[in-house]
Length: 310
Figure 1 (cartoon, rainbow, N blue to C red):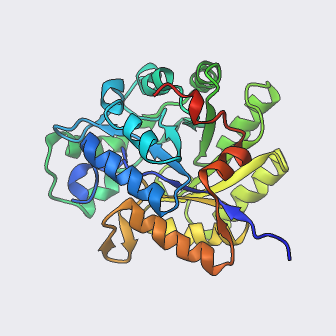
Figure 2: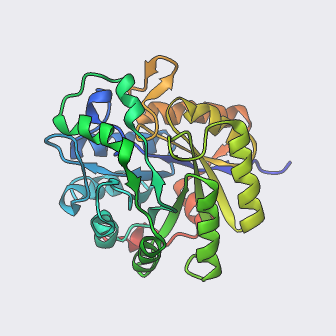
């Protein structure tokens, strides 16, 4: 009997696109972020995608000093692959966004594959009581916000982080982002295997319909053949349903409070670890296996945790 396929679970427990007031369960301090990441890894997340926050007011921060308060602890406590954001916040310059990846030289960094409208303002109709002044302006100003990821930005991230042996979680929010990646592959600035995180349901990107998922899959198959590793990120209430569809069709998955505050309808997730447990049930129900961190390293061609700078 053939061995079952192994599914990589990425967990993003420290979101930058949500504000702290929206859920009392969002980790903010370095201690909380470390606790959340370790718990997710213990539940089976092979990769941890990490942001940091100002512990005073929860603002997204790319200050390496804040990252240094939780990265060594996570590494000591788990074997999980650490994936640091290069997205940070749409309000930051690309140089600021890259500070943690340049300092810590992680095995993986996220890489947004195109500029896009980044509409978070609909959250204001669902969450009306916010704790900090910056949270309201952060949401309302997204009516007129372009998350800048130009070809020059992407090339800079590829070359500067790639020089440190860091590979990438290519975050593709629309079909054009797949073509942008193909452009850099043609220029030999990106090398297989490509870890493609296809993102659904964020206003400004591709929608969350199952046909959207299949359109992304067909396009990636045509552009990259067998040279890519596919993963599904469904935003908000679409997290588990789209991950389930993806897993059934050969995908890996990403969950976590960065991408969705919910565990099920009308029930906030008390932790990212709870979301990992939920998607593990789906994976087990399909008679598939959970990939270990070492499995993920082999599948993605990573340099190993001995070669990071933390």
